[in-house]
Structure formats: C-alpha cells, structure tokens
Length: 120
Image 1: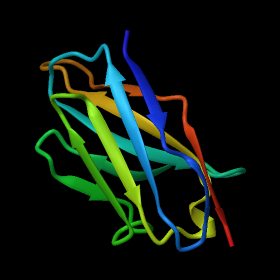
Image 2: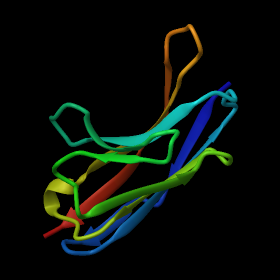
Image 3: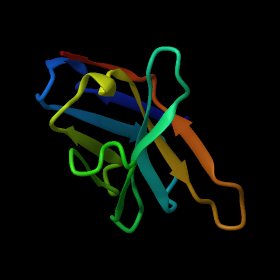
C-alpha cells in the first residue's frame, strides 16, 4: 500500500521561508514523478511543482523563482523549499507521486496534506 507523509508546514510571516518534505513508501520500482499541489480555502486544488523521474523540475508560474523542488528517486523523497512566501501562498499543500506503469494507466497517490499559513 502506497503511503505519502508530508512534514514541514507551519506559520510564517510574509517574506519568510518554509521547507516541506514528503516521503513515499510502498511504491513500485517504476518511473515516477513526485510533486506538490495546494488548495486554498474556497479554491480548487492547483499545481505547484513537480520533479520528473529524470530529475527535471517543473513549476507553476505563480511560484517560479521563489520555490525549488528537489528529491531523491531512490529514497522516494521530495522537498519543496519555499522562499519569499506571500499571503496568497497560504494553503494546504499535498504531496503526490505518479507512477508510470509500462503499458498501463499511470497511478497517482496523495498525502494527507500539510498546512502552510503566511501572515501579512
């Protein structure tokens, strides 16, 4: 059974930094992507950043230049360094992993989420 556990959320003042971490267990040994989505109150869940199996990152325009994703595919870990945080970054951040099964449908698994609050 695949499980993802996030950590590192909390309260920070605008302009501050936080580092989120995610550890996945029970995953298959197949190519996968790990990343983060977030959901603010009253809004839809939105993409934040992802790390491809190749190691290449991808970011939402709203966080480019401020957030950095890193990880270790062999350890199924991902980290999101968030700098220059803004009040609009306040949300529950969800880690996910997406496994690409040869000849099959990709499977996505989600963590429980970690709250990030940015005070102005």
